[in-house]
Image 1: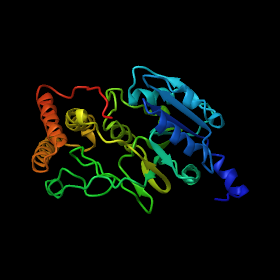
Image 2: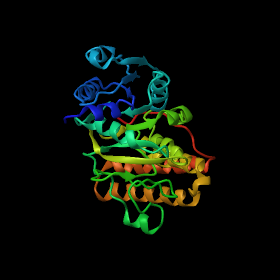
Image 3: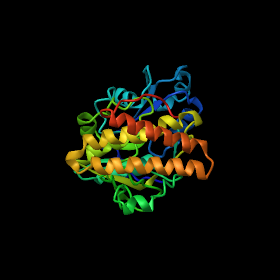
Length: 317
């Protein structure tokens, strides 16, 4: 893409930083940093927050053109790593975002993001990249009929279940944004931090954060700001943990935002439906992972019945 002088001047008003939490994925991190180096409009600051067992400072050193700020944080936790990265933003940064270490940005992705922010109104607080290789989950017709799933992409339903935003062709306004592919106004970063209640991988921590921001600001997913997300599958021995998080972490969010219309009654209904769906599919399709996930759903329900959401650590991949 050829950018004229006027466009460069306007885009220069957006001083953009990215925080990249990482843990034990040096090759993924190297691939992602290569995609940042190749951008037609490079970021103004890059912060790598490393929670790896063996530090990846050697990988960061391979990209001197990015002038990366390296932060080492142990024990690792996605929410804590994101907060630690934002704590070292340079004063001149006007917009800052988060990138997962396993994404790859298309050549004009940062340019398109910066262009959006040039003309974005003050009522817009956050914008996400368009994840072009993720079709998202297929909504359950039964859950829609029972009123526990929202009726439009990007919706957070009263049950706390979210309708994912798959690849898009036009900009879409959303109730929540994917945590590892977002950019926020500086004033949002200074007013909101990730909730450290979400430990480890932090399932649904991005819904919690962005839905909180949504109370005061509009949020968008940008069609032209494209990237691919090469997330690995949940490890077989982590399916039980994932199933428990599906219940406990979502119930935590519902309790937190009941004043916004989220419903504990519908959240309980969704938890029971998840339990039935995962268990039945696990048996019918002979997939032990789904059966283990259903057992995790049951454990989460029992935990909730015993007195409320418990903060559970762990990593899925």
